[in-house]
Image (cartoon, rainbow over all chains, first blue to last red; front, side, top):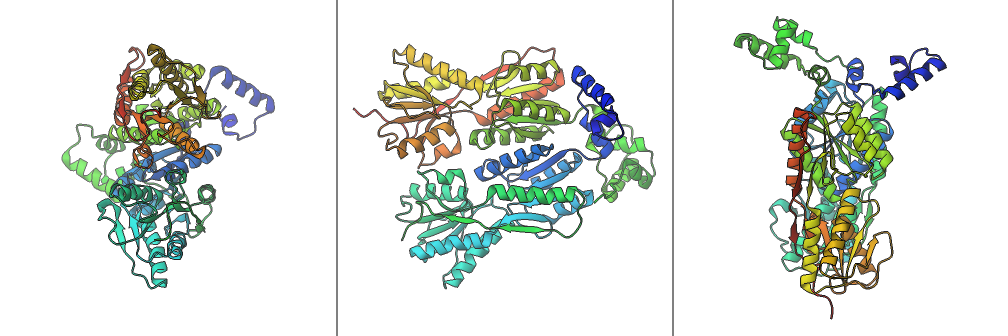
Amino acid sequence: VSNVLRGEGRVSDSTRGRVLEAIDVLGYRPNSLARDLVRRRSSTIGVVLGDLANTFYAELVKLLELRISEASYTTIVCNTDGHAELERARVEMLLERAVSGVVMLQFSGDGAVLDELRAAGVPAVVVSCWDHRTDCVAVDDASGMAAAVEHLYELGHRRIAHVSSHLVEDSTRAARYAGYEAAMRRHGLAPAALDFDAWPGPGDHTAFAAANDVIAVALIDALEAAGARVPDDASVVGFDGTDLGAHPRIGLTTVAQPRAALIAHGLELLSARLRGQEGPPRGVRLAGELVVRASTAAP
Amino acid sequence: MTVRRPTILDVAAVAGVSKSTVSNVMREAAGVSADTRARVRAAVEQLGYRPNAAARNLVQRRTNLIGVVVWDLANAFDAELVKRLEQHAAAGGFTTVVANTGGHPELEASRIDALLEQRVDGIALLDFTGDRAVLSRLLADRVPVVMVSCWADYADWVAVDDQAGIDLAVEHLVGLGHERIGYVDQPTMEATSRRARLAAFERALERRGLPVRWLFSDAEPLPEGPTALVAANDHIAVRLMERLEAAGVGVPADVSLVGFDGIPVGALARIALTTVAQPADELARQAVALLRNRIDRGHAAAPEQRRLAPRLLVRGSTAPPRS
């Protein structure tokens, strides 16, 4: 019976037929725990993300869960709310559950987490943020953000601020800021980084390159609550390309990430490791695409 | 790839104690001297030993896993519920396994099978296709189940009071002077709430002597005639706002619009959706409590069913009808 279930060993067709029929009749369900105990692995993939309430990640998780289940794995989704301590605790929990692999949709950059995964022999892939110490696939944050700045510059903006928040993980925030800063310097402009968690107000900036769509949409809300109109008085560009930003009432100009390609590449990297592929970490960069809508205009 | 993980035997050897003593220390059982306990802990620390959850759970017959079956994570309300369920479950020592069904009955059945193969301790059904066979089998197999924001007579559930919610929406529109009120839902919406909200809407109009004439799904063309629309959820309402305005129908200038759920997007000034808000956190908290009760007490106890009160949030998408 065990051989039939595992699809192993020499079992005649008629025996296989009888076993499968009996399984059908009895409603027998193989105990995956007992099976995992033998293999010391489960058929589960852990997914770690910072904020399920951010529609970009909700969309990614939905896609990811679909692809993972097509490969006959189940998904454990863990939300960290962007706290590094929670991230470590959740990865620890996933290891205790003997997951086969881990997909991190957001990663704090905590090296201890990677060490722990490596020590346990559990492959991990970071998707939609970058870390050279592990397999990862991400949009090219720096050139995406530079494209946003270029767009604002061409419209005539010179006082352009970058706006981020604690919900953007460190590596992504750094990369997007670097792209912003490089583009500003290229035009001889002074960079300014604003923290949306402690929003100081727009100051004398006429345009804002936000680190993601959720911040951009909240920023539009805050600017307009304070009496400024977008894009008449201030332009706002987001990053991610969420459905939310595409709503005509929002009309957010944004740098869209190729969501399906991110997931496809990420799972490809992970399954190579699950098949036992050795070698140094591989990183894949995908290009983002500037989508111009109604939240940007000449100053 | 295959790094050998330290086992309980390694810990026992380093600490110079028996395997069962290590096990007693790990389970924090009584009857181990402080000195032995300290030696075992030091060995655990030194080796980086992690008790195998699968082995431990096989003994305890518990996995501390809760399966969460959800319709559509891209619906912000579903995502919010999953997030809050996960938080309340984690606080009680449970881990959640999420399965997204996309509203397909076949997927629902196969995802639930996958969860059962993981030997989850219980399942939270956030959405239910209405396929009684799926639920009956779960209950017959004595799998603890809690239904969240959907329901069935013979299961534990916690849901918002849909009827009261729809009545709040209609009351608000009638108060503004609307008499021609339409209702919009979605064929792929979760079945029990879809039926309940639609029935509640019809009753609310009939009770007030208003015509029940404009009932349609968001896959159909927009109807002519109504001055106000109630949407079965915010996800539908926000997209409907987009469709109406693309067709040159202003909200609320030409048509007032009320949603249901209370997703954050509706609170943005640009969207300003008047809506019937569900108490998401309370739904999640009570769902986890009901499920834990069921897991602990087994199947003899009668089903527990709770209705929570919704709240009307009046924003900018509703106004008096144009005279």
